[in-house]
Amino acid sequence: MLKLGDAAKGTAKKGAPKPEADAERTSKFVALKPLDEPKAGPEAGPKAGPKGASAAEPKGSATKVSQAKAAPAGPAVPPPVEPTTQQPLPPKPPIDLLAELTNTPPPPETPVRTAVRRVKIWTPLVLLLLVVFAVVQVVRPLPTPTLQLTAQETVKFEGGKPDVPWPADGQAAMDVNGIGTFGTSGEQKPVPIASIAKVMTVYLILRDHPLEKGKEGPKIPVDAAAQKHYETGKPANESVVKVTEGQKITEYEALQAVMLPSANNIAKLLARWDTKSGSEDAFVEKMNKTAKELGMKNTHYTDPSGLDKTTVSTAEDLVKLGRAAMENPVFNEISRQPSYMDLNNEKQTNFFKLVPTVAIGIKTGTTTAAGGNILFAAEKKVGGETQTIIGAALGQYGSNGVANIDKVTDVTKNLIAAGQDALKAKTIVKKGDVVGQVDDGLGGTTPVVATKDVSAVGWSGLTVKLELDEMKGKTIPNTAKAGTEVGVLHVGDGKGDAVEVPVALQKDLSEPGFGAKLTRVG
Image (cartoon, rainbow, N blue to C red; front, top):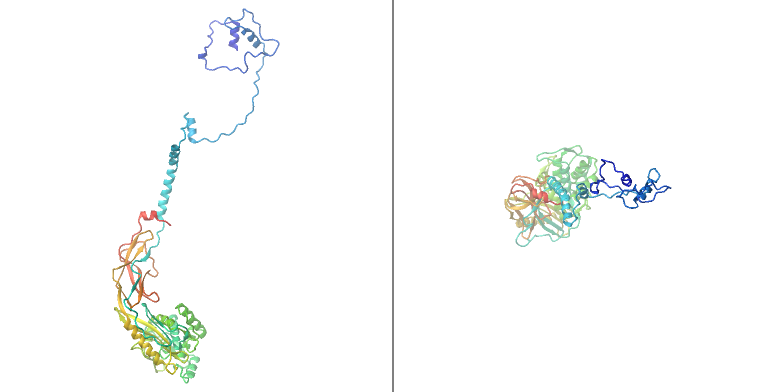
């Protein structure tokens, strides 16, 4: 406005700079109000005559300048401003911020650029996860190796089944210890077994009061009940041996008295001695509990001697008991004895007359209610090893219907002969044959071989089973040298004890490789 006023007056000072051209200006003045807007007040500004106007000023400009000068002095009041509310701006992507800082606009978004950006972001995370996964897989505990049978699971002996002379009456059963069963005859229902019950009595005494071979064991005081039982039983033709109260009988001799002359009074004495409380009933409870443990499902005892007709069992059950009893070396030794001298220096003979010529034991039992009964054991050497035949014949009576020990003895003799004739050996596996493998649990296997020949003993028509198990009390290691025994091969019918042969690693057992560890699942 000053420049405009100077021009209106036409007063140009000497030496003053010339007005700036538009091109030389660095800024432009913007008036708050138009310059030609009329001002309020009586005076429009200083008067200018015709001579005071600048020649360069357009016509009418003097009036406008004078009007401007006539405006009252004072601060200019700006026009009212409409209030606004500042809204927060949304966050911008890093690439947009970078573009603003560099004054470079972001590149346009395309599917390719999006994919590349995602790859750059996720690739390091994925690689990190893969590394962590690999480390975890490698350091995880290895699974426990297991044994697997690769040989044939069953082997059958050629030919038809042998002809076994089973008794026409009563019931019978026979098998070869650890090999298989010849079968049974008659209905396997519980029947009185008489003195064969004493086998369980002797078995329990030796189990709970074991003896070393050649040792007599503790001395057992003879009580008044044992003496009285002898005094009343002898006239009644009961199986008893003479003892007097106050005497002491060794455990070994007491067992002989029960097994050979079948002394009822000593069987009861042992029952009272075992329980310490003098209770025969407590001992009977133990007999029944043990019968269940041996799998004798149809057996029940009511007395330790078998004199009660309520003490019952089956031929099949008694074979199980005979097998377990004959495994005890002291029981086996006593069972083979034909006689002994008692503490009164009297000779006591074995009622089982086939011992020791035909049989090696076990026990006879005869009562009116039970008939003639024998639980027997016999042997035969087959394939270089001795095999034990266990059998039982129950409920044998003579032609007059009276219990007959001679008849059951003949039945037993025929069964033993047939069983011995039928036995033959068959080589199932040879030493060094691969019979299985160790599976490391991650896809790797190592073969195992038999450490010696496996000759199964059986008879025509018998099928034997092969099973491979780990060694008792041991687990298969993850690494081992060739020749290390890692399991046992069982050969039998699966019902009783079987022939057992250790198996060993054919080559070194190594840990699974890195790839197997890395790719394992579960």
